[in-house]
Length: 399
Image 1 (tube, rainbow, N blue to C red):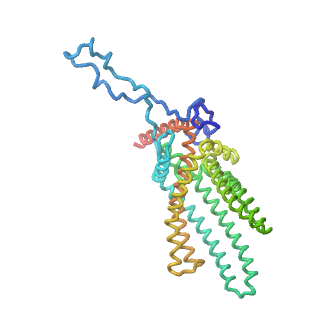
Image 2 (cartoon, rainbow, N blue to C red; image 1 turned 180 degrees about the vertical axis):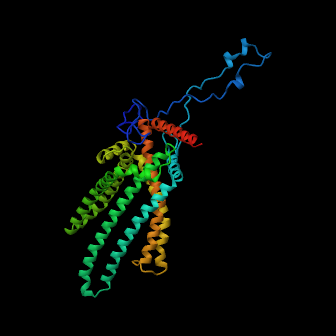
């Protein structure tokens, strides 16, 4: 197994200077260690001429305490320059606290994109899903209120319609979530080097990769569902054959296996989306790239991923569960328009608050692993300095 922190590891192809890809995320130089920091000239010494320079006349002669002994000292042995930080995180390997702090900073740095785009995309998605549910539940209610001899045929048709509506809602949710994740990852990647991307610029970068991003999302979903589908098929087959003992064994043991499979695939493919977006990879190449980056860092990624999931689920639950109780307390029809509207508003608010944080953490995990393994901090520092110089030049020209 490759040591993730081993110096000199050759990074795969990424964005290089002069290419159409985003600056600062190109491959590191040959033989660069992921743990090495950029090595600019040391800063001004802490003890300069004003303290230990040439002594005043008449106190200490040149032969004893002259400049040869108390001149300007150099950097102390083992000196490492502080990491560059032009953006939301320091350009060095990040700890978990710095990743979370950087995620919040990315939202504060560019709220128009992080919250504004999230609000637009999530609202449209949830509204469409709510309309589909309202339409389906309306037909289902009519079937339940019909005469008993007509209910069977009507319920069968409504069940098919409900499944079709659920499939449509799933497609809408998939497309909207994929688009939103791509936009947010681009915004975070620019905030790392101190730039604030506009919505138009973010869309310009996401649009060429949108279909690939959708295909990648579908591929990951297929990987997640293949084992559960086989497991459920075996359980159903044993139940039909009335093999209850083996069925319960497969149900319990297979359930644990499905959980392990889901966590493993989720973690190993976690970085595929930022790799595809920021390196402009193709679908399979992006999946392989994310798989390679996660190798050797599974447990760290799993821990952070689970913690983020718990945080997101807690925040969403605080918003959604009280809203779900409102129709019960007010004795409203759970399938009525008012109940669905209350639930939709709560779902929109929960998604708008949690999706930017989750996308930011994933983007920063990708950047952190590339810094650790490929010395990406060197390229990011150059891009940050270049961006700062351009901003200063632009400000001077406007003045």
